[in-house]
Image (tube, rainbow, N blue to C red; front, side, top):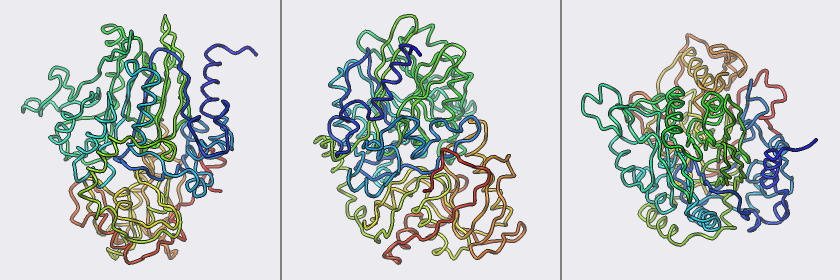
Length: 584
């Protein structure tokens, strides 16, 4: 079989990601070989996303469950552990195994150390720019940057604006950025030295009539929909796509004047206009849709060369190539928590033909020295809060992490705390994908708790709900996760439960996925009977209870040592040998 040039380049890119190029597949501690990138093409596009305000290096365990159904079955990003390694041809001896999977996580984490940290990320960004030529390089931020830590909460996201300015972010879009008030969002964007773009965020007509601010009153765009960037001899169009379901997944009361949506038709019209008016050498969509949504969008909207995606926190070693009516679109996702830097080198050939090389580089903090200016900024940001952040609460008796479709040990800690502190039978906790990892034997500090819980609507509640109410909540969230149409998926994971179990068929239709709900003592949950339920993070009216981090901190101080012996994991039906599941 004869390989086409495009296939050859793709295989070469896969080899680089997989550690098959000499020097990368070594079983030794990762060294500078991992970050060697031979210059290729005309421009270099760098990508971070979903850092969730993690300025310091962290531990972060990748999931062992990321189910894909229907057209997503066996396709990125729904591959974990062995299935992921096999798909990308990654050597089992490569340090990239630790970066991309949870295989032997504790041992590997102790060996390779923490990941991320803006001071270490800054060092890697400067290297990638310097080696290629800063005038030919752009750095994108896919959003979820201003939220996820205590310091971001206390500074209302401005600390992350400062850090991103120093990092040199050129263009960004948003999601959790919109969980501050509208005037705070605008204040932060005004301080941001790059461009904030979002074609799918508009000002409501009634708000416009009332004098609400818009980037373009004629089109209604709240922010700049796209920006043109000149890199050497080439012009690049960068279009923004903010998280389309922000007012549903997060409180709309913070941003009452703004509307959101996927807006695929508007996007196609904008791409067509940009191509005819600006005549760019490449069109990029900087997206916070989630990878499944981006893949469908790439099928529906033509003219986009690359989608740099976020929201679903997927560390995907190579772009997924999507064919559409007029060519192909590359769809990427660059993980979360500052753990990765995506690096794409593009060769902009004539006649629309473009070639690429891509690497998703793990930010191993032990291998990348901290940039002194960035570290100084981080130290200044953290200094007023160190006593609170470093307050010891308990000791981790086992590995504590969050990410997974249905459960996580730290989620169980939150649910246990909610139940105990509120004398509730059942606890419900959102399936957020942000939150760092704590190794066995580590001291759990207040900072760890804030990493899991810190946001602008943290209030807890305790109320009576019927069994039917509880089932309706589970069914609704399950449809957000498993709806066969990606446009109806909101990302995230299933709501976590405490004090109960249930059975779920992810392949079933809306309203018929959940059954066999029981309290942890085995008693069946009856539809008409009322149960005391505790939870947090309501997206409607503000709840009356204390911030959830106070609930969890008090619970941990009482425990002193945290041992999670059992997770309230649902029983799964009709999953079979799904490559997005590995519980071994």
